[in-house]
Length: 116
Image (cartoon, one colour):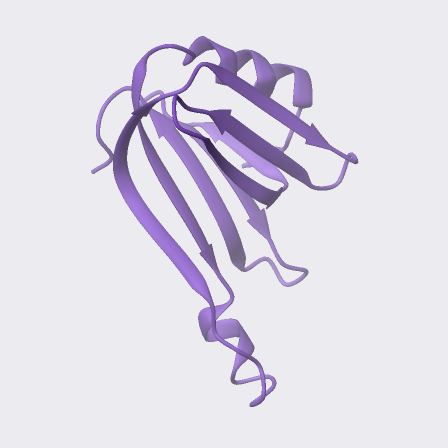
């Protein structure tokens, strides 16, 4: 993966607008939190192959971390804390955010085909 290039990622996000796509969205601090601080709460969310269409995609950020929002017919899907991206060999957009030690904290992936 490489650091997010906001203009390139925005262009790719817009290429999926008004199409049915599959979304993978994941957040976690799970295994990273409680073993460091026993008072920490483990939290996370995971959704894979949610099929949706969005009419607008926006990426904003401060040059270090970014937020991507996808406007659907009934509301928004968003991921915050993203820092890296890639288009993989299956032509899927993969966005991720990692903590200071390189561990995954958030992932947003978009594809025209279901994820394996």
